[in-house]
Length: 315
Image 1 (cartoon, rainbow, N blue to C red):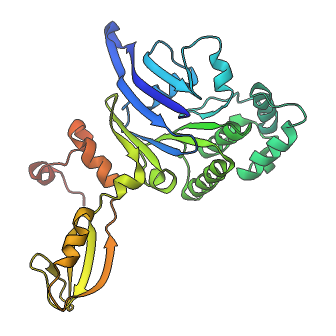
Image 2 (image 1 turned 60 degrees about the vertical axis):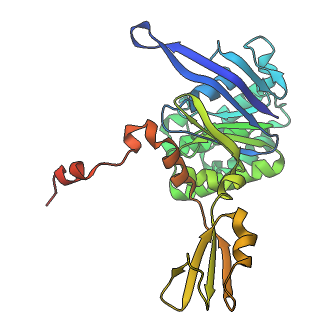
Image 3 (image 1 turned 180 degrees about the horizontal axis):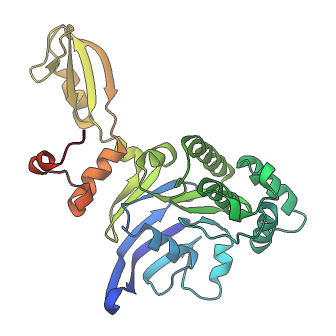
């Protein structure tokens, strides 16, 4: 495993010096070469977990292992983190520096040699369309442009592990698509992707593993294919209709059942029934996510009929 948490907890001082438990007994494992989606609502503990990995927070309990070695906040951690590429949710850049100047500076900090810097800068500028902006100072950049630079600096030194906190924030649809292409290329190169998000379509597009965190606790984790594979099978047929099927009004009927009942259901079809189509229903990750954590969040609960009725109408 390239990254793992084993019963990790972290607390900090909040208002009135009260201890706030940001993460509690969090355990998950990120397989090498995977694309891992770390899912959670705002304030669930995603960013805190990431900051513990990259060294922005210290003092956790439990064990964090990075590249097989324990992260303890000591002097050797920087050697592990040199193999990381990191894009925080709210990156801060020196606004008086130009794009190329800044990339060269960050490249040297990441261990790139002087000879390797030009090719590395050319690569990321091409991938993120920063070529015409090489001399432009970052202080003039929009939110989306900052995200582009942020991803460029994260992949500049071709890290083994990319850790991205809400990487699609502030991007328009075209740049969201481009970011997905760039991340797919990084993974093809051999990098492992670990990114937090509450935009579930992005996770469906990119990831093969996932974990759901809520109120500082991991609720569920595993392979995304296994989760999506829990969807029922839909059998469309014609002719004699099974008793629990639904007549679709066009001479066909439809029957839903779990994968575990496939063989028994097919064997029990009435004589003369014709199978037209057998396909798996699609589970929308967003529906799963909302249903999984709705009970913990007032924002995620449905308004009742009285609240809906009392809402003022606009002319």
